[in-house]
Length: 377
Ligand SMILES: NC(=O)c1ccc[n+]([C@@H]2O[C@H](COP(=O)([O-])OP(=O)(O)OC[C@H]3O[C@@H](n4cnc5c(N)ncnc54)[C@H](OP(=O)(O)O)[C@@H]3O)[C@@H](O)[C@H]2O)c1
Image 1: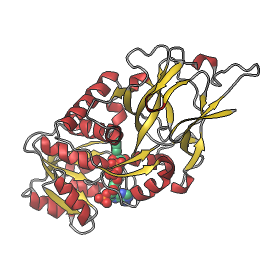
Image 2: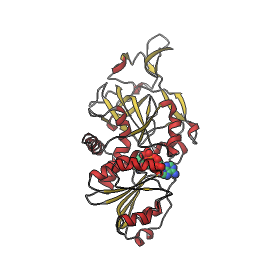
Image 3: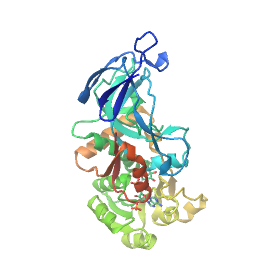
Image 4: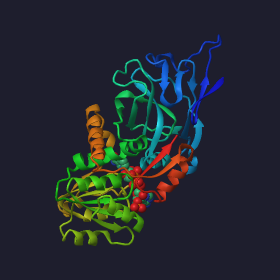
């Protein structure tokens, strides 16, 4: 097997059949029929047929702490007929990757972690019409597999990245920004004059949510873990910021809302905040429990909603909201427009080399990160 260098971190292993002809090692049904010569923008032209990529990926073989993340070579077959093969340029880190790693959300092992990335279309299946090799694309997928240099993705799950949005920004945005979009525009449609409460306001989703809610005319109360994060949250849309562990949540929210309560709570902290969040709502308010950073929230009786003022409770997930192609496209379009109009500024608080993904996980879980976290392959 001959190894060719195809760019930073990418090794190409040319594989030949016994009679010396190049071939793909994947099942023949998966051979890419349309793009045997893949143009790789920064690195020149390579023959996909003459080479097999052995990209590196961060994979887990068991559930556990960040130490279970291993950098390994993975075998990527040619893309299927409806797939594109994406050479990643930036990979988003999300708290959901921690749930996958620990087994809170069971995955099939071994598992390459990661739900979102951006990159360049490197090859495509024969049925793919709307994308061409060299296009800059981004995606967020329900199936893990993004912590890798190269990946096959269903073509109807990617969107093109508009000019003016960098690869890193897109990787920081797709999953978190589309989450902010559906939470603010569909789960509860935020209106001018609403008071909204956002937990983890200085985090990846949090900073986008707060800015966007403010742009929609809401007054945003953010909750963060430190003074430094409070400063950041203020600069990104929060009118008031409470510090968890120092400020008492319910009395503070009552005071700030003149005893009315907030229209909606966006709570992704979960276990530690869920019950108090319910107590912050006005009658008929909406409790949006969309994550479990501190652990899953407790099970409650519907009566708890009734006695607090006929509250609404929902536990939404992005992938239900963008399951249809038209919803994915509309959500991404609105998100990119919000960034281009500067209603939302993308803050990448930290980047790591792909091989240092475990360090990124340690920092995320220890609440040391702010804004979005991006891995660079
Ligand atoms: N349902 C969906 O569709 C969906 C989609 C995307 C994300 N999410 C959820 O949204 C949340 C935010 O995701 P993200 O990727 O943007 O992460 P993140 O907000 O950047 O990081 C998590 C933050 O949660 C806060 N936190 C509070 N208690 C914590 C604890 N015990 N352990 C760890 N962190 C704690 C920390 O902020 P402070 O130090 O300021 O408290 C921490 O920085 C996650 O719960 C995620 O699962 C849900």
